[in-house]
Image 1 (cartoon, helix red, strand yellow):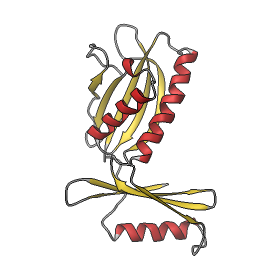
Image 2 (cartoon, helix red, strand yellow):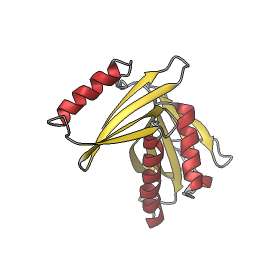
Image 3 (tube, rainbow, N blue to C red):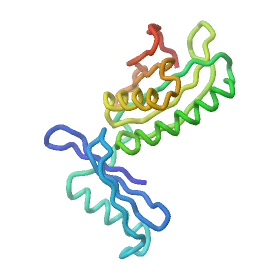
Length: 189
């Protein structure tokens, strides 16, 4: 999959991406934060291989001002769930899989970003505390946080226990807590 972005004249961020699915190429374009439109075409069709299609795709969209995001574009979100033990329970493992799956779908279909991994274990809090962290790379911090909150609430994936922190990839600073379902405003990775 390749995803390209373009800043529109109205200030909104647009995306264009493609992937190969079975014997079809899927192109997905839209405004970041919306589902956009999807077109499917038989593959390889007029292209002899994926590399040839990729060159055509990059040429078509780069001519319109789209480009690949650099390593320091966007934000890294941490969606954090509290755990009671270092290794987590069966419920924590289930939650990791289900939340990651829901977030992958929501962020991907809206051109917002990707789930970039997870970890489970002890936080940096001096008082022993354990957490499940799910990392999401998003292109728009506000829309990304809104999407995360919405999908976890709608899928009933322990939304009332989460904390969401964010770090701008342009600077190497600390994560800043952006949302806490509880009144606790402390955040430790």
